Length: 190
Image 1 (cartoon, rainbow, N blue to C red):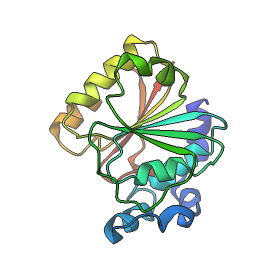
Image 2 (image 1 turned 90 degrees about the horizontal axis):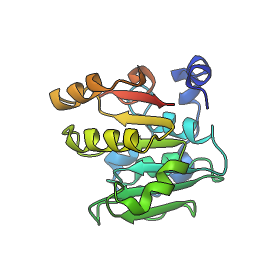
Image 3 (image 1 turned 45 degrees about the vertical axis):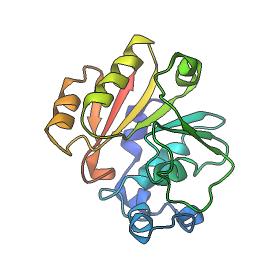
Image 4 (image 1 turned 120 degrees about the vertical axis):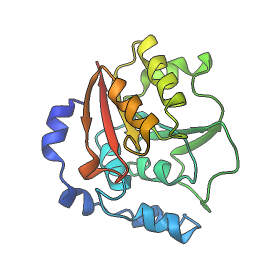
């Protein structure tokens, strides 16, 4: 997908019209359900659902499962498979999930996942926000000549994340106005 074409067609009003209620009832904690249903520019889940609908029959990667909300949003298009990775187990706060999500407890940078990464057109990176793993994963994508869209959460969360965002040399866009209030960045790997 060409980002410039996608970028000119996205606005918060359209994103806020995306119905996320289908999976919202799976989220156990009220606080996280409220986040999930939040408006574009405050939360990024409607943007994730929109992006999921730009692909068909693709493997979309969610790096950093946490409560499971991002994977639910990425699963909005049931014709895609969402593979959600975290190095810790037991974090999810969902009672159920659709068949097009697979949760994996492992390090995505392991060599056994090279083919999966290479075939994925969209990756969400939402991990510990210390800039360390984010940089490691970014360099990993560069080293394997990955091509696709990398969506970064919390690029304005703290100094390490701002430093990481500023260090990126690929074409990039700060799309916080339609993403997450703590910063949403989109990086284009060609």
